[in-house]
Length: 145
Image 1 (cartoon, rainbow, N blue to C red):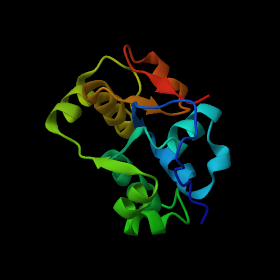
Image 2: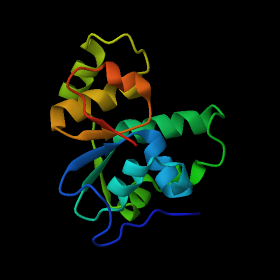
Image 3: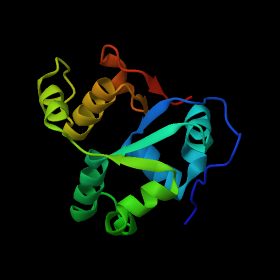
């Protein structure tokens, strides 16, 4: 396993709050070289406040179960431990997140992405994602490259 471990004083972005998209979380654990330059810097910078959503735990578990994410069983069994090792806290899904995610005027149908967008908006987080679909969400601040 190739963990991305936070280091003191490195990176270009500091003192901000970031919600990691599921792929950013997985790649931070397994292959940090796949992260965009800014995403990597965000995740390495100790001063940043990192979050991983319960929606990502749900998405990873679902994809492992249906065979779309082979080899990620280790994350399912120790999700909170791996989040902590990346320097992130877990973010629960609240009713307000679910309601906004389900009702926002956005054509994107992926329920995991809809909840992540709603969480980032409500909680004031930047979203660390390479998914271009998020650019359609008004007011959502997305970071990757």
